[in-house]
Image (tube, rainbow, N blue to C red; front, side, top):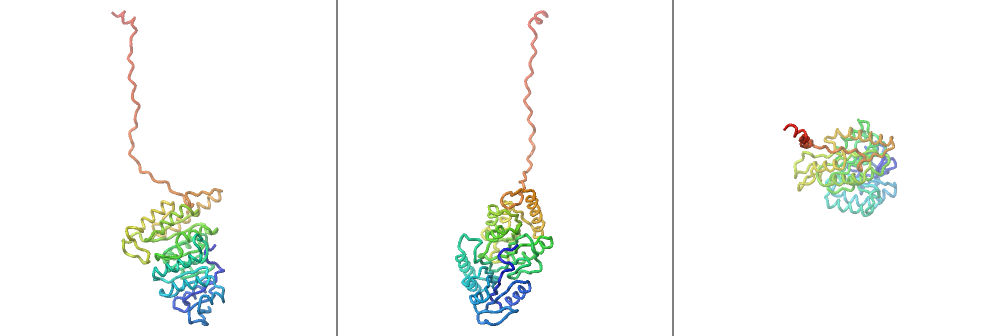
Length: 353
């Protein structure tokens, strides 16, 4: 039950000697992640929480066979750190750093994409972030800053733009008895390495993921594109939530990409797109666990009965559109036939005269 990371992940921490890098290295090691190396130029030969530090990613990969990197490098140098990890052959690059200029992110994005090849959504290398909380596979590995004590292994894949919203919903899923296969925070910047469609593709391909929770927010068109992708390609039940329903136009809300501009990117538009694709939309985060539990129960019942039961493309049962009651028209009665006139026999009429 895992997507992207598992117990075989060998993690390298770029910026390990900094405050955030050192703190979260300790947390990842405590969770059980195999943190095999750290990188800070000029600090090679040191150790942080028992993890050896190297001067370059290439050296660290050669000595430790690291296959995943997490970046806690300041924003001015974070894009260079992504390039360095990609050049060294790292398969999964997770950039936690926020505040990267969009132009820098674009260069790093295209570098990673060129190495993976277009039209290869499940290929390597892959970039997650920047400005994201990372990801966690419960009981196996965590890469980033997601808290480990709120997750539990299970069949629900979680993908979200928001870090803290991810924590809230994952905790509610766990309390409801719905464990997670992998939780992925993709970040809320205008340009990110892994989007909703990428994550949906990964979860759809994972045989142990039975349902997917998707949490979006205002700004951009990623949610609308995800809704169309779900309608066409996803066979597993999906529950969606869109943050920012009351956000005023023109004001950025938290993330760099969370802004309604030119009348586009509103929560209402995104919610309507999901509903049109047959995806249930929670109005508040606490509704998500019950919606997912209901969809999973339906899916399992259909499988038990030997039926595919796929309605649309997402496995959810589409509600029939409600027809507004029209005013009843009076029933039309058939036109009465004209009464036949009785004619008296000619003989009787003559007798009366």
